[in-house]
Length: 162
Ligand code: HEC
Image 1 (tube, rainbow, N blue to C red):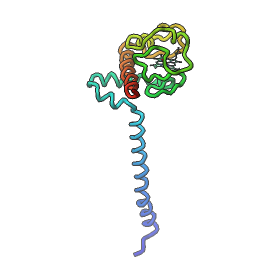
Image 2 (cartoon, rainbow, N blue to C red):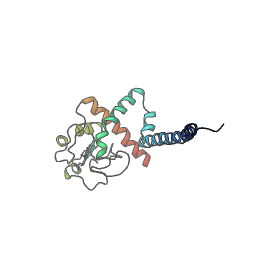
Image 3 (cartoon, rainbow, N blue to C red):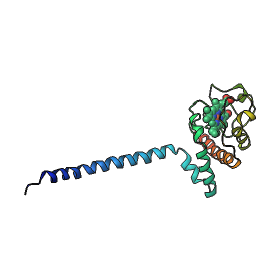
Image 4 (cartoon, helix red, strand yellow):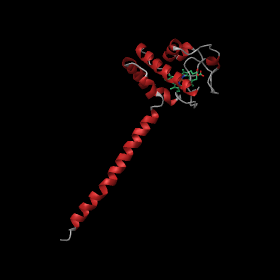
């Protein structure tokens, strides 16, 4: 018996399904690879943390979202603001970034937990004359989480480069 045209078109549809599935799988793989690449050093850092610390770290990561538009946290790319790789433990205004204000370069500040918290809550209050207008989270535990995240991510970058 010869197949009707309806049967033929049904077969054609079925025959085209594997390729649709392949496209879907391709997208899924790209998505996973992309997510892994964006994870940067974070995956490795998270492994070294306790469960409680991981929660703080993840919260800090979420709070860092607005910072990315002006700062590179892992690499050494300058954006509107200086890259923050290697930030933790170094002097304020000491990255290879041509746009620093005199105020931040002459502040004498060393970035640690205390100075980062004070700066992020109120940049201009802590370093009068800084050109960083954006401020971080206001709430105490949010600032602590953000600084916890920055501390791990930016000191880890130094470790990787040395
Ligand atoms: C609108 C752009 C912008 C945003 C958003 C921003 N910053 Fe900045 N940031 C700057 C600029 C510009 C400077 C340089 C300030 C200066 O020279 O006085 C700076 C400087 C800094 C410094 C000092 C760096 C150094 O090398 O001493 C830190 C730390 C910092 N920002 C952290 C953050 C964090 C964390 C966030 C997110 C909560 C953030 N910034 C959001 C523009 C921004």
